[in-house]
Image 1 (cartoon, helix red, strand yellow):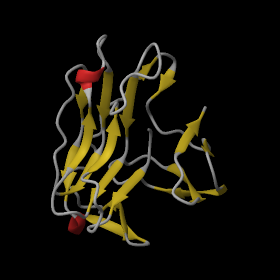
Image 2: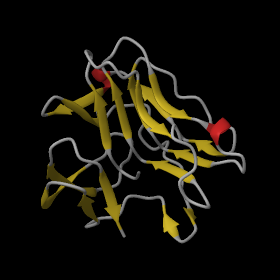
Image 3: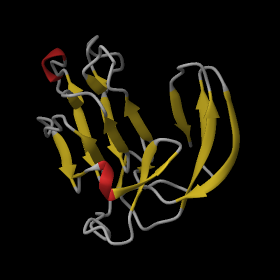
Image 4: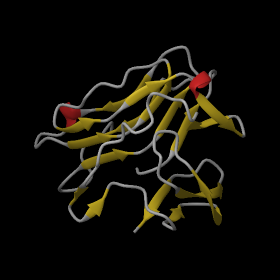
Length: 171
């Protein structure tokens, strides 16, 4: 998951925003790459990231790099992988668009703290302009420029209209 804004409402029953591995391994090699995302929790508590590492006998690799958490919740490092450049911010520190905190203010002390995410298995973990979203259900509109909440880089966001579908970044 690269360059997304994922928000959870205050009245949700699920306390976990990003969950991986609850059903155990699916592929011969399992990994989660969470890079340059803004995770928003409007609930009173919860987990920004939960990985069921105990269900992977061979281990699971998790890279969580340059993510911004907004709201209350836990964002603990996984047992194996990279966990760096992640920061927390309050809603007051962000510019809000359509009800979502998407961009740091110009005076934010978090500006410029982004780490070089690198790549793994030939996949760059830095958001790319003009990348396309592929959806299980739904449609994509043309890309519109925006600045992610935790970066000074200009990337493109696609307006997505989908009935609670899962989006994957096409490469």
